[in-house]
Length: 287
Image 1 (tube, rainbow, N blue to C red):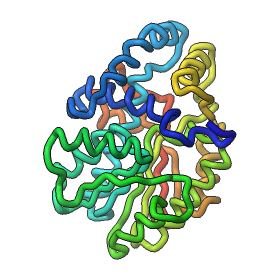
Image 2 (image 1 turned 30 degrees about the vertical axis):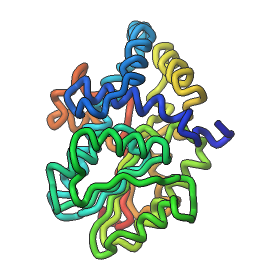
Image 3 (image 1 turned 135 degrees about the vertical axis):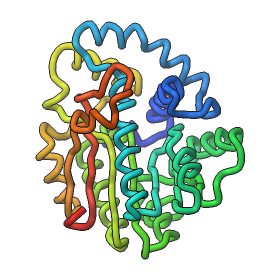
Image 4 (image 1 turned 90 degrees about the horizontal axis):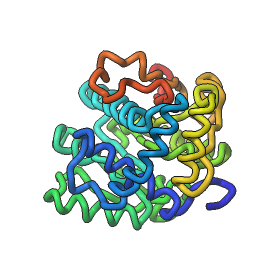
């Protein structure tokens, strides 16, 4: 790890394995996307999660399920309305989203999963155990912090159709970087989305104003030990984060409160979490 935050597979990948297991545990994923490391980490952390819960910490499973399901909901709405036909999921890890959406939408959607080479290779191997990829689904190597070069986002987006809408998705990534790096990432995203008639960005984000109290502090400390470094909370309020997104080049931005979508997310185990927000940003003023 550097002062910027998590920039190597060794520091990010434990969470990818853990979340991969949680998604499968709740029926959102395929068994091929579950690793023994993820299963082991989940059971090792159960006592700490139980202690945090007793002190008032949020359920990590509820947080993970809430953010994943709400991002899925917003993506589905955008696809079905015709606003987007292309998705790039950055730091996709062992997420089932690319596989599921490619199966669901077929040739209506181009889905690209992108990650650092080690994790991208592992994802390709896991998906191969399920079966052949859909024609418009692929997994590529990408360094989200690179401004140029063959593994940069700019090079990847240059291969897409600029007459169609594009969405960029990140999940479980931002809080592992320092604020200046997050702002750089947002500027990079807004810049590559700008040429598209519809450009969207969805991601989860935790706010410091919503992560207070002894139980939550315990939760953050445990999570920091789990990923072998600090977990950064960059913005105190949704408005601060929104202004940072606008300052990074997005024309419209908001932070969605999952509790406003409780009816659509009613079946989340342990309930919809209010300890995570979902960014919805667009390069068009009307969203």
